[in-house]
Length: 147
Image (cartoon, rainbow, N blue to C red; front, side, top):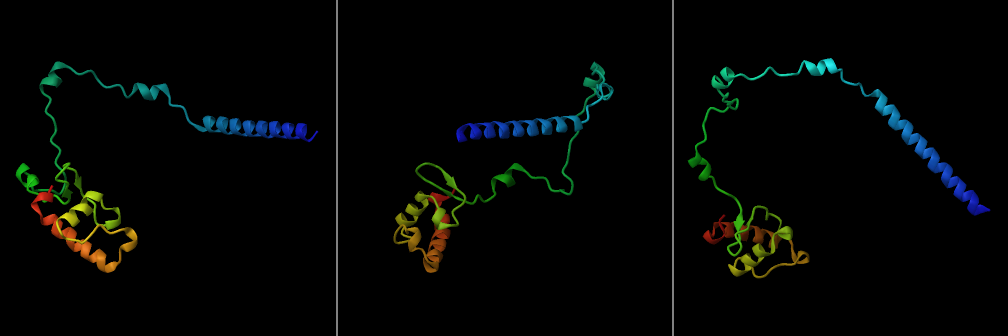
């Protein structure tokens, strides 16, 4: 008997939820205003003739407040920050936190002799982290690792 009562209760709850959701959908659909077809007719563009095509001059848009033009030579001379993996060519730009630094950067610090070993996360303290930051700055100066 309790199983039948439980099944009837579940069916009743499902019906109530169904009715509430459908009423909510119907209420939201009725509040959306419909666009008038007359307003859509006004947006039609005039046809393009050959005279318009011949006399067309594209507008040059200049950014406001910038008077200096950037030449290609100045953009090529900008300093790129990061480290390049000499084996794969991958460039890593974020390595300021040793715990999340890529493995090849940690190995490069050891192979270049800037740190003694690859440290585990539980071995890090403030003195070691300062030593690692100094080593990373020195590693950036090596030609082999420049991007």
